[in-house]
Length: 151
Image 1 (tube, one colour):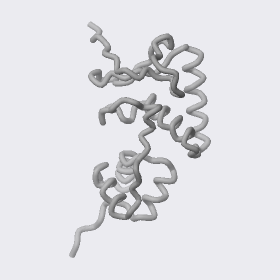
Image 2: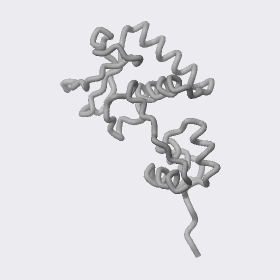
Image 3: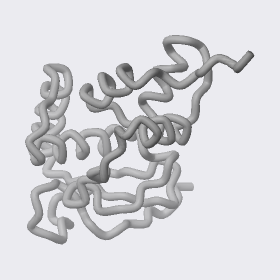
């Protein structure tokens, strides 16, 4: 007898893709719903097996850095992904739209942009808007920054 499949079926993966979940978020949802641990790689493999993979848009205008896995769920990068989705004509649900609007308003009020330091524990940092080094659509500093460790 074959062991039970832990990866969701094709229809579930389609539904979650339409919700805008990342492969890691899908793996997390499997754990939340069933208690079974599934890796992001297993989700990606299932997506490919079912023919659901596409050339994933990484929103390079919004997230130009190679983001480490440990930083991939940070709030700033999640908001930048939402910005990229909107720019590509994607839809946001009410919660996402509200979160993005509040975040952008807060960024504007504080005159900050997002910067990324792959070598720090936090990864993403808010820095003064005057350090923006491009005229692109995202409130980011394209170059990586390196934050000095605080004593």
